[in-house]
Image 1 (cartoon, rainbow, N blue to C red):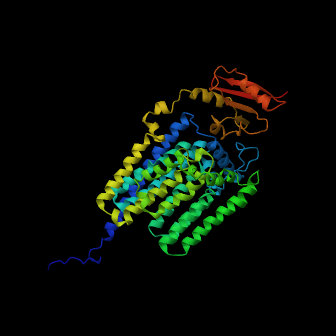
Image 2: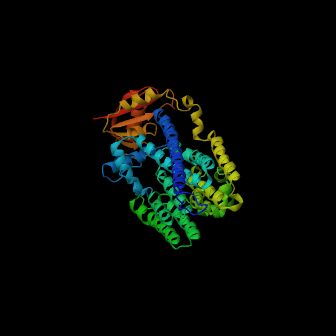
Image 3: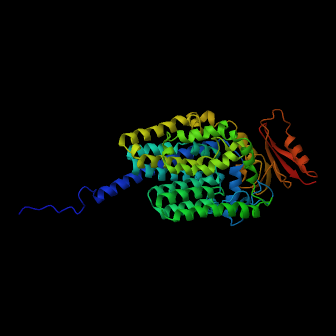
Length: 470
């Protein structure tokens, strides 16, 4: 008797279930590799910064003090910002409470850098996964590489930890779910953004409008309302209640009147360059998707500000725009008929990867080409000696040079504020050649009348002075 082959229950022309599962597993594995590679790259960069004492600003110290307080179930009273300053009165970022348990296990400012790198890497995996599913393996991997190396993420890694670290994966998860028409997931991920930073409520508003347009359901409008409601609540009620000045500290930076007087100010060089670079990193593809409109609230508050630091491409301010423009590019390639061809997808994916690699030389990761020069350790011994001169558990007034390395084990104050007399003062005097060893002690006595300080460490780079009883 001749054996008969079992019939295939799958409809004619449809892929078999094992093939579908295999393809899904393959895309997930590739996306996971993209995320893992990005995490290694980001963390190597952060480690090079950390070991060479290359501190970009006082922000890492600030968020280290916040994490330290949360780790001990305390309100985030950040002395670097000022005596008794509650950081929830600066920006509205209650989501940062999740840093507490992590910091409790790994009590170091470097932990925050690793956390941020992991969050960025998660977003790389999420965006990469969608790109591979929508565009195919090679184009999708190229898009994932382009996103991982995008100048906004590079600048954010270089700028060290900020609260927007949480916004980047949340935006990626929300927009990818939206494109997959998983409306509930998209709603939930986007809704959480209001707890990352107050201005993101307006970004949520835009996500809600795009969702309403695509889904033709009222849920998108509810999401938009949620975003606006939290923006108003945070800026007009919560932040003023927590801020020492009883106001939203950044409201005065929005120079709307200045824009009305001089509309041409919207086209200042740094602003134009930022917009052009946003389009360039996706080879202009993001402009073919309505998702690109989600960048408008962030660009609006930045360009309306009278602070030039917000206009350009440095610092962390553009990180939240990266998942938006790359998801918009994926959307354009996978939805528009004029762009929907295998050859164009391959060329476009390769273009995005090449553009990102080419721009690396102009942004932070270009320093990796010569780490010995970019992250010099010549002054490490001086920094370590200065830190050793400050015992744990004391109060310290300092500049930003070694602030983050002190924040884990001392109570740190920034020298630019009006502070109570500290136990120690540590200052970087390398920019003042020929400074007498007693300078830091003398200057401390002038800032704190009635006190006496003596020099306990001086080596031409750092000086440490200790307060002594009179």
